[in-house]
Amino acid sequence: MNTTKDNSRTIELAKKLYALSKQGVGGERENAATMLNRLCKKYGISIEQLEGDELKVFEFEVPKKKEDFFMQVVASVRREYRWSGFIGRKVGIEMTEAENIEVREKMDYYWPLYQEEIKTFYSAFIQKHRLYRKPSEDGTGGQDMPIEEYKRLLAMMAGLKEGQLQKKIEA
Image (cartoon, rainbow, N blue to C red; front, side):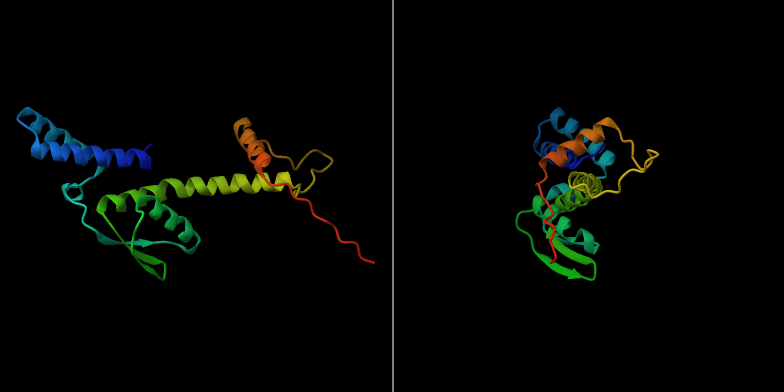
């Protein structure tokens, strides 16, 4: 389970170990270098990523349905950024290597989670406003779901705005 929070902690730890491997004294320096090498190997981090905060333009391919979500993720990683705008489905954004990794990992982690939440919202909305097909008399048409999912659905339904369709009377 490699979450974005874990990734940023890993990058921060790697940066600290890198600094210690350069500025430490004696055994401290050697231990930091050894730990840094292990960490870099395990997580695929290069020393170049840790050396500086040089801004480069990274290209992302972003489907139309993910554009708004993607820009939120970018804003969560880098407050101020310059981007080349979408050309086709590609966008170039100026950021550091570490920020590039964080954006990609956040998208990989949060987009599927968001899609699941959308499904739950859809079910809650349909249930809240009774926009479903009535079960048949033989009892078919219902759907079993795990209790935890049912509780989440009920909680989401409780938080939805009440709405009632006003039927128009034609004269």
